[in-house]
Image 1 (cartoon, rainbow, N blue to C red):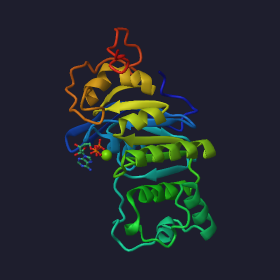
Image 2: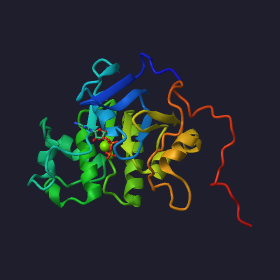
Image 3: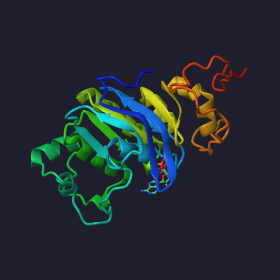
Image 4: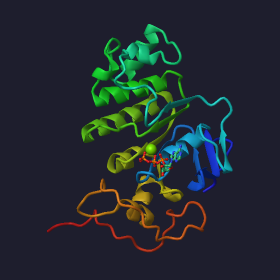
Length: 264
Ligand SMILES: Nc1ncnc2c1ncn2[C@@H]1O[C@H](COP(=O)(O)OP(=O)(O)OP(=O)(O)O)[C@@H](O)[C@H]1O
Ligand SMILES: [Mg+2]
């Protein structure tokens, strides 16, 4: 799969990121095209947020390079907010940070994300789902071509997650924005993504949700069986890393599919 295209909104080519002497990302390539929903999956500490921050230019890369389309309009929701959630602040005021928006624009964007009329509510008084929707609302105010969401469903229960992903899908449909998001929520992600990238310091596998969920690298990373897909396992790095990009697409050996067993 070619990563370098003039049509990409954002492209990372073989980037490495180091903190001190420690290489946290090794040879990671990734691209997002207009209108796509791409999800990065990986265990805690696998470098997902670091990758996002490198893509945004917040942290430098030691090797490789990142290209963003000229004039790219980005909406970013970080995993952790610089704003303390317990700080007294209304939703209306939060939407005007750092760029002031009109009352009409604030009302409209809240309506779009399904939390109409919450302007005067304190941020600290919002439910988890409302809070994440307000974060998304703020990211939408710049009319982004690319939304970058780092664990946008943190703190939500399963129905809340599912509803949130439906909302993201609706936003994509309305605005045509591409979405690059980080998640742990395998099932919903699988349903809501065009492409999935499994990261563990390097790209373990990538492709359509169907291809990735059958890739041995993915199975090693997330485990299988009775504990369910939400059980995260440390990846034991038993596969070789020195082959080309895009492995996970063409595994020709038969996969064991546990999903399709028929009882009786
Ligand atoms: N500013 C930093 N300085 C030093 N090390 C860092 C820094 N930021 C991240 N790291 C380290 O880089 C590794 C990857 O961190 P990162 O936050 O990207 O992981 P993640 O995949 O987003 O994890 P999580 O699922 O917990 O959010 C971790 O070992 C982390 O300790
Ligand atoms: Mg993270």
